[in-house]
Image (tube, rainbow, N blue to C red):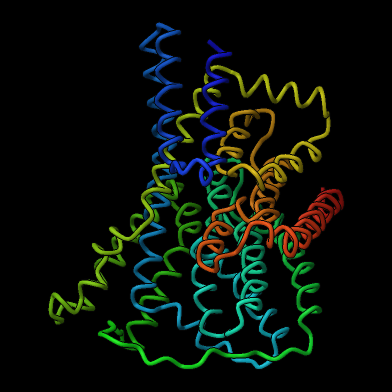
Length: 428
């Protein structure tokens, strides 16, 4: 049975990694893999009561992550529909490319810690399209945005899916992850940013010509923009506080906040015609969220759970410890592998490989895992959701990224690795 499960999982994993060449959505591969794995496990085991109980446990843990992501993605969609992000983007004004690079890098880094790296990448690339005319300049900026977005998401419990998974799973706590991973994440961004801005030194910003928009465009008032931006960001930031005060799971906080935002939106637009407010409603935002990604998370988390329940992951952890021996090397390798393979299944597998009894919350393994898995995906453009989004939005070629950005990302990654290990040894 174990051999069959491993073979099926490896095939499903390969299909996910080769999504673009195969032209098969990774969500389909994840669901198919999960279905096959649980079917094989149930048929071979024969103990239907035990398998059903384990599946219920897995479903409860998976649902927490899914509800949280759905709530967070909907809130971001509502803010974006109200042009709320213009509160930030409208304030960025400079004539030097290097200065603009630093501004974009820092805004992306901190915005990603509050939103998520995928959303932040989409917002910031949309911004540079309005600020820069030359495509080659925009490509460099897009590369730095991917690195900064992934680095910014790694040190915040709500900034990256993998960090959120570790946070909801209890492996890390809010203040500890922010204190422990902030400096390595900052170095991960600063090193590539410094090198790139030096290359662009002395060059001027060439803005695109103003184009008059045709057709009707739904606009919002400054008051509506500011209100929905402040409320959206406020709710997302308040979720860790809600968890600390009430000890309830994060998904309850995000759903509670979503309800408040929904009520405010209804009252705010109550006097408008249905046609005028349709674009701004939370009902439309729910339709706009990326349900394909949500389904992917469900599939991959259910698939990995079978390997956990059959103790395959525990045995793998034992083999790695005996073969490699050093936790820091093992986690660094996992981070680099996430440049090729999606970091969600990698972290899900790692959570099943190492027990909380041996590695308690906020231990070296979990914090370092959050950093490496969150930032390692920047090394290749296909290694993170932010990179894939940038690839589509700016038509970045895989090999252009490898030649121009991968080296920068790799230097930043190891800079952060060294910083975290030194920091940990100094304070522990």
